[in-house]
Length: 283
Image (cartoon, rainbow, N blue to C red; front, side, top):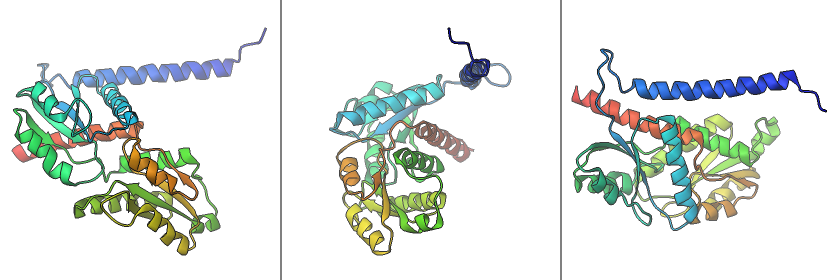
């Protein structure tokens, strides 16, 4: 009969206790948000509507739903809904119709500014009865960079490098692409933040509608003596563009951002920021 390891058992109990305390703390925080300092119940928080683009790849819908559940786990008292711009149900227009004239904050599951953020989503809001604000897209933001870094290390990016390895390394930040200059500016900013985190060059590149392509960026880095080139997938979920960009890598490619815990925290950060901006503007 194998003897029990007291230190391992204690560590397991400590881990279980920490998990329970974290769950209790999250639940209490959610409940306290509903109560004023004078003990009266606060008005219900505006709903959070996560706005996804939509994809023909079934993995995209699965990823978005998992991310939605993580947001709900982080803030159980908050009503959280899903709406797609196209291709998948529920469509955003249907979600807004179901909400009626309630108050909501729409958080785009998009990684930069562009036509969808500036026109499509506001137009759908204007055509509905919902009293809504549209939050900023998810990028650029430190939590987006945290997710990109985590995906790189998962793919094999070394946490420590020698000076010679660092001089030979680089990252191509692969994004969908847009003709909107603000979208390109946001992607460049994300690349800059990731370069600061990694200590190597990070070059933005695009799957469509903008230049350079991932292949062109890889060739340019190779010509500069950077032969250890990783492709960081700046896509929210698996799909044609993410697969296409990953195939171009000469070294390693990351998974899409997906339902990483930092992405759920980022969604709630954008929601809170939109509410704070509303209160500030009203004041």
